[in-house]
Length: 330
Image (tube, rainbow, N blue to C red; front, side, top):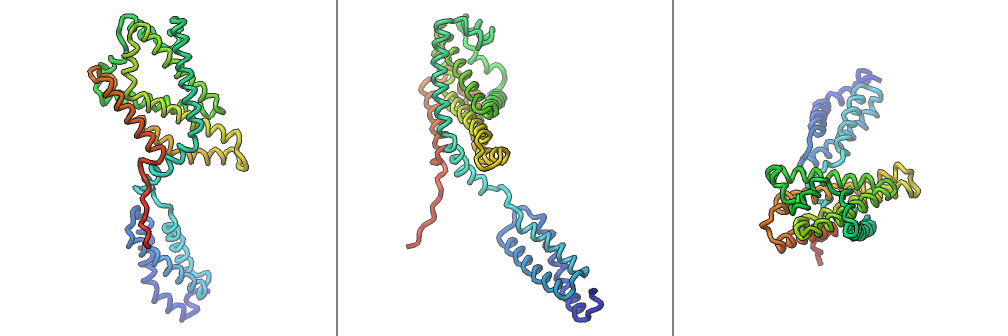
């Protein structure tokens, strides 16, 4: 039925047409708005209620008419704007740092501890193997590194000559991220990749410590790794544990499909990977500006390394960003 066939409905439509135009303009503004204030949000909700009420009236008086179609289109646009998910703002970031990261770390804590034990065992095994068979060091060190150590020079303190500390830290950070992503991706191979990555790095660490110790440079290598090593090795174990958890979701999806289980576990562990990247950024800064400087004493390096590791553990356990408690009115 058209508007012209119902005089009373036509009069009602003409009376409310200017208000509908204002509501259409408010709908367009709400769709473009990214960070509305409380007042703007309340105005949008009021406009939505008014528009829905008018749409119900027009559908009753003039079903299938042009005004009804126009109001339906405007109401659908405003419905989308009202129900649009909140953007990831400051509150979202704080929630992720305060809640999501510790929850993800707690989900893989047991696996990470087992991988840390594997790292310690393989480090000892690497030390023992190279101590008994020094020629095996050629499997884990380049000829340049071996030649330098045999002539009494560590390769670690020469990295400052590669560029300024800022550029060096960026290169170290990118390399650490690649190693961590490798541990995570290999961990998805049903845990076998994580075992390989951790065992290989442990053997390499222990073998290099044994080789440098044989030439009187073991303390120098240990001194170099004190400031950044604890967090770097811990992050590697965490990333491998997260990858293993993804692999477990593929093996034992439960009542979900394998794809759904994988997506669910990936969403849970995503904040942990972001935390690993942030922690590696700090490690890269330490390794590029503190570790290569021989004038920095061992106590200072040990303090930096343990302090940074303690900060990491406080964050992953949820103690670094405690939740604010609202006062209870009694």
